[in-house]
Image 1 (cartoon, rainbow, N blue to C red):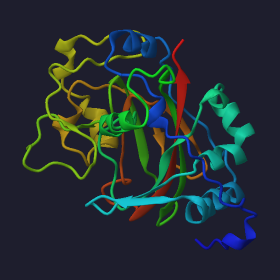
Image 2 (image 1 turned 180 degrees about the vertical axis):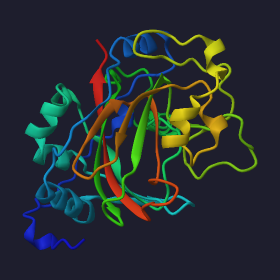
Image 3 (image 1 turned 180 degrees about the horizontal axis):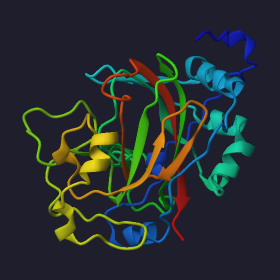
Length: 290
């Protein structure tokens, strides 16, 4: 893949200084959880939505306009900052994908460049980031009236290209801060992540779109047929209590929209044919509690 950044007509770097963690309510409050539950929606995938020219622009923006880079021990690189500029450039397209996106006070998220499949997690936000923001905006400040709402993933490339790989979005939403889900696994060998790890689902409150899941269902075994076809790479125990809602190909230019609190995971292709590295963009949108 070759992109000449100078030919992309990228905008001058603009600094979007709003910090989304200073705008968020306490996600542990019962009334907030109830409000979020009533706004859950169905995950969707949109075929051939962004053109190769669009993807080139998105790729170039990563390396010209973002401000923060970090990486995990598994080699995944995260590039973030100023993602409002991506939304502004593709506003009409994104608003069609996600009506209400224009009401989000800021756009969060990150680019990710990774050699690894993504294990089971949600992408609301880290509680630690929220708590650090109290030094700037008090926890009880009335401006804290937003919650994580819907996320948008835009696959950019895989290498080698044309490798068929998948993403799975589960019925279960964990209306809480961002976590990695690691049920039944050895706590002495945690996955590479900056999110807190949950290693026992017994007492988790999972919501589906229609109800609170019975806690007795939290320990049900995962469907073996679906596991063997799409999730063979992950330890089977980690999927305890879950059911798939959307299984789709992870294809460049085909965005996926899903709830911020929705558990999801990806694979690397088939056991015999796998990509080596992939890049995508996660955009996170927020909703005012009303």
